[in-house]
Length: 219
Image 1 (cartoon, rainbow, N blue to C red):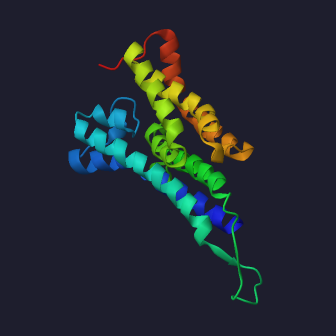
Image 2: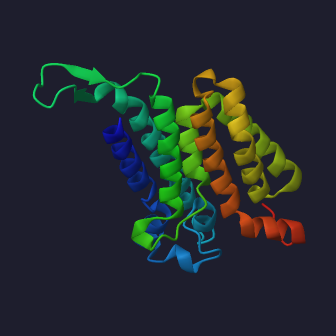
Image 3: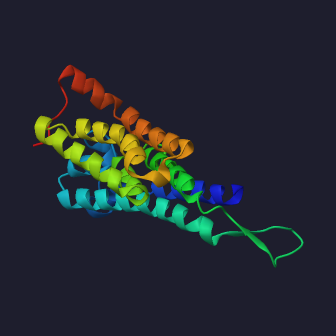
């Protein structure tokens, strides 16, 4: 269990830390996206470089890395066998099949942490929304739909993408607990709530601007 957990934590962080926004803008536009707008490496700031195509690609790739981290966590425990005795390789003990959902929530958290604090960019990354979208979609797709509807409604009514992201992140753990019985354990919900809280905290500057009435509206 410890071995598989370590593999999942490291793999998820490294997947999440791939800075697709930075790489795409550097490769195709010869620019450093961190010198544009908010300095973020996410899709919204990539769009500010003038390339909507690269922004869409960033959004999709950031979501894919989150999805991949959770998919690996769901797959690994059932395929990882550990010898019961160090002296024999004939008998194996397989990890509890109920544990993947806890490990998947852990994978989601570390993929999001990797995006927010990528080792390759001196731990200065994005806000984790797209990565969380992919990770949560792999773990609790019905709950993601609830968050997505709330996001769309919030943006449609206020034109604030940041507010929609914050509300979607806040509602997700509750929706997951309500709609997805297989994640309805204390450990899993705590990890999902931690992921959502991290996303909200990373929007602290947006929250200040929202309260001050100076946040940029989506056009």
